[in-house]
Length: 444
Image 1 (spheres, rainbow, N blue to C red):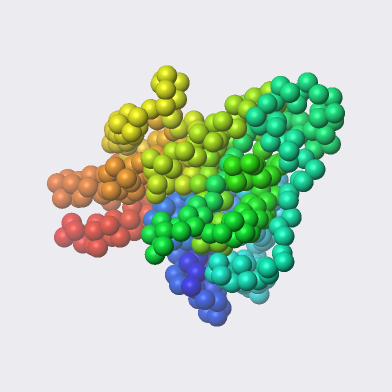
Image 2 (cartoon, rainbow, N blue to C red):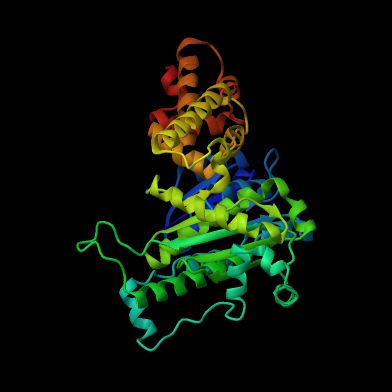
């Protein structure tokens, strides 16, 4: 059963598409509707949404903006875009953000339902069991080595870039690989092939580990091919290593958002590897640096980020820049890590308590103020407070609005405005979901 969110600032379109979906015979659990990007984003944060169907032009937050925020919140949510404008620029931006289809209004009912069916059908592919996966490959199957003629060179580049850069033959091979940058990042993928909690506490055989790594490599390559310039290969530590590069124009296009994009990629990698292989993968993400001479630094950063899983065993995606390593002459102790984590959460709470009534407040804004990635902040906040970060924002907004309803004569739209909602209808919907009664019922 799939959950679908329909977003359009015209109520009749939302109602019409919802009715069409409800009578389509598609396996749908819930159909949610939203009349603005902000309302839709709240729904995505609070509900389990599989498919987002959104208009492009919707006032304060466009469909493109919504797609960007939705992808940062939950990278696996699929999107179909509907628009009254057959504009190449809009279509190009939508496709770049991962839209599965771009439909022009007025919509043809069958065309729309075919598009929805196609997207959901691809999502519905069953996840084979590990035993089935192993058996399907057969005893004689030998995984193909990715970039076999270049893997040794790429691994050397990550450990001794000066030696590679000083050798003309190796530089020619790098040129053959079109590894020119000038901006680079390194991602490491470590499969958790030891099964804690299993009866024998034993891992997989060497052959099984090899096959799982091969399968994970294929999943990673399929994801990366959608929007990244990358080279993926096996490293001696039994990990999958990915070098991502940007040329000057592509890096400058969204320089401030590239780390967020890497974070989204890391969570997508973990999500899909877990979905299809039923095992966790720890993802280590380096910073972005300019020049091949820094490849050893980037490799070390990604490896060090993976080690964080020892301290946070229930978390799987780590960005090196989330911790201020330069403040320590040696690797920080468990106590120092704990103190630092508490400080991040405390600062985040203080910022939220001062800014929760701000319209358009996002998790990414809170994270930016703390100089950490949204993914890591969300994890720490939940671990330390018991609340999802956005649940905490809603908690403060609802408690404040309840106080105003009970003790002032302010109208609903005035209260909605004061606690950060762009429409009284959106405010009422959140209020009723939180308290079980509407603002007007509480007032009575």
